[in-house]
Image 1 (cartoon, rainbow, N blue to C red):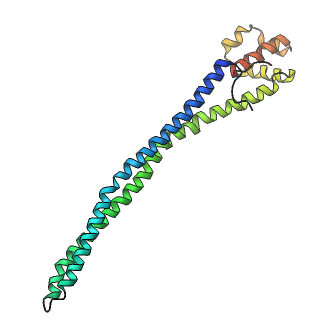
Image 2: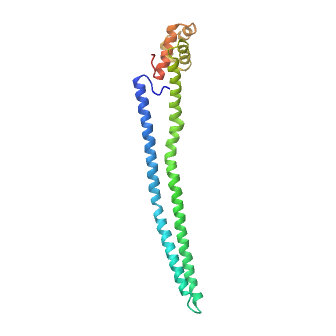
Length: 200
């Protein structure tokens, strides 16, 4: 497997790009974790609301139970306490719901924050990088074999810009078809240079 080019400028550019991508992904993961922590802080008011609502409901229910023991009018006196306790339980439930919403948001927002950069890496940079590794590995394997040089020359004829091919001579294709070793070597060198490789 060929991971980096033979030519120093190309290899340096590849190395710097790889380092940049790793740092970039790491920074986005750190940003996602920071977003998670910040959003989780929004659950604190819900926790306080739930605690306060539950405490008030318990106290009101306890007071209603004590008032209910009063003879004759006890049942009538407990109704306001029970109603207030139910209202306090509703407040506690609202606090629980707010916490659940915040916990869901603390998962969704970081996932979005890290998902987009990771998608760019996985669907743009990684296929490009793996494609180069695959092409360079094959080219490095066949570059010193005469038949491999012919394949590299054919690829150069098929993929290189016309301006580069024209610099090799106006009859470069005809020379390649005729099996001219100089033309084959020049075309193979052009393809290797495009990949950042050298002949051994």
